[in-house]
Image 1 (cartoon, rainbow, N blue to C red):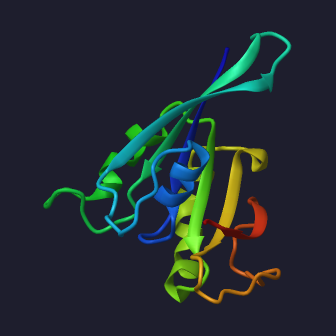
Image 2 (cartoon, one colour; image 1 turned 60 degrees about the vertical axis):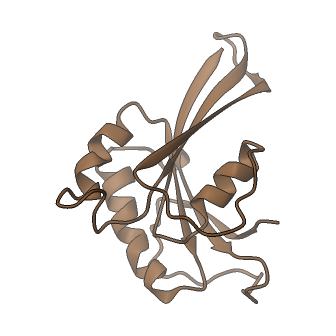
Length: 159
């Protein structure tokens, strides 16, 4: 069986946990509670096929807290990033398209988790997340500062 470690990274309140819960069919969270450090969700997909490893894939989604200020003062969250990135197969950078400061942070997340890890274009995904009812534009987003290495998804809505 194949195994894949995928990191969900991005600014605080971008929707990383909501999307991770949705993909793993975990329980919904009704009120915001910032992820401290990292939360690992595991699930299997028997529909994934490979020529040399059999059928199916075991996924680990690493829902990484987005607070770059501090994990447990005086330590900084960034000091944990090398351990999180070890043996990762892909990175999903998630941001809230309705928060202007998130657009400025995309390049930092891309640099730290993609460029410095020498990941390929196909191993990175950028999700512009709109919270339901936020009135976000459902059309294409014009993100001139978005990393060119990422595969862009105009918007992703969660229920």
